[in-house]
Image (cartoon, rainbow, N blue to C red; front, top):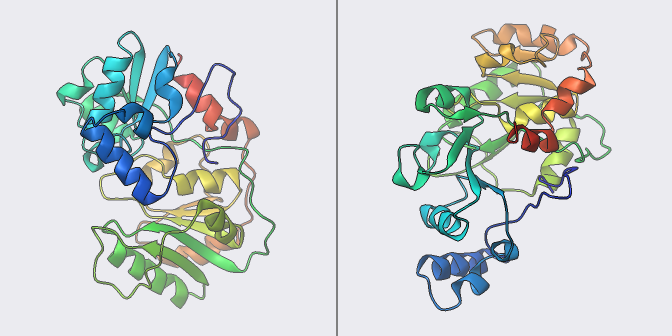
Length: 285
């Protein structure tokens, strides 16, 4: 769903492993990693049977053995490693030998400057539509704890004290803190869109050290929702408008005034720059 954009005919999008249950996927990964008999047929989707000039690999979802296989299977192809998360959240650092011969790109300007890698923006799929829902919630947050639990708990308390209705869908993970938050199970993206449709504004709380735009920012942009964010670098983007985006900086008392200001439409050309098909084309330049 998320990757289904208006792509030219010569592009193909595929998962590395075959679709299936979590148990089936686990078996496929083990089978591939251990190179058991018929590991390609049993584990991989059909992409390995085709030829490609350029291959973009999303680093977080790809272990080193996958990258090594693709490099050896496509020795004459241009291979791009795309960091869709911060470098430190992956198992593949730019100085790792596995990266030799690959182009490294990231959505995070800070990482690009630190590691000397190329930059491309975060992206979204313009074909995704919000369901028709009445706005019944002021502020919506969706994401895993990732060490942000205490901060999220504090934000939620302050916002509710100011009279805002909030819905925080926070899931646990390995960096979950001790908080009073009501942790929930992960939900399908279709369900997340329903909650988003019911909300006037989205809360975006970045992970420590991350400067790149999160998916929440692009959702706010594409669906004309107000955005409250901790990302101070957002003021340097072409879609930044103070009437639409509030940067948190010990100024929580100003949020009521911000929420009362009407949303200002963003130029269509600016929005489309962040669309998936245009993101893909930037790798060609």
